[in-house]
Length: 77
Image (cartoon, rainbow, N blue to C red; front, side, top):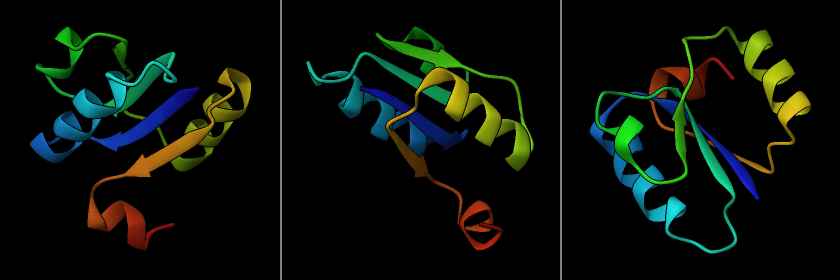
């Protein structure tokens, strides 16, 4: 399974850390992630993207599940 996490804070880092420990998870992508998430196993930081770019990335990459951390991003859809 490939997972996308939107956000750059400690909350998103903690979520990425736990999800990456699952044997069912192949890769965790963080947009944009932070300095600490780049050291997590199975995790890849992405550059900042618009909603449209995230959707395109998700379709092309085969993202199975998305976690949106920041409340602002949740409110914007």
